[in-house]
View 1: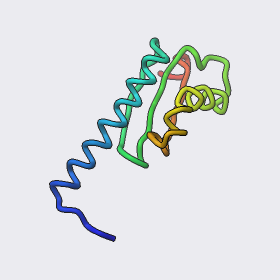
View 2: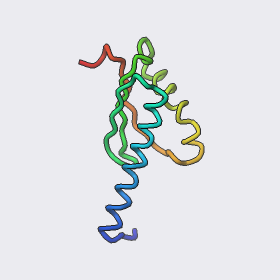
View 3: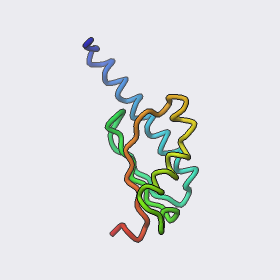
View 4: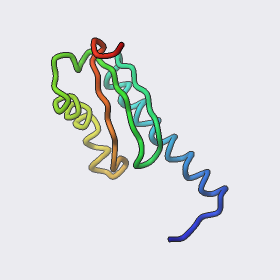
Length: 93
């Protein structure tokens, strides 16, 4: 494995975080009433999405709804991995 200089590693890490935040912003446009928070970077990225759109849906149906929204980003390779936590407002204390 090739090691990168520390400064370059930091820049790459920041770029990945910014890219991930763009995904959160994209989803915010698609789910305008949702509360979306992002944590982590790259393959350890996790999104928490709390939305009224998820009321009455199973976890699988919620994830499909989000993943279908990001279909183009996955197909283009812009997004290759994403961990989701999806909740309805009634499930958040």
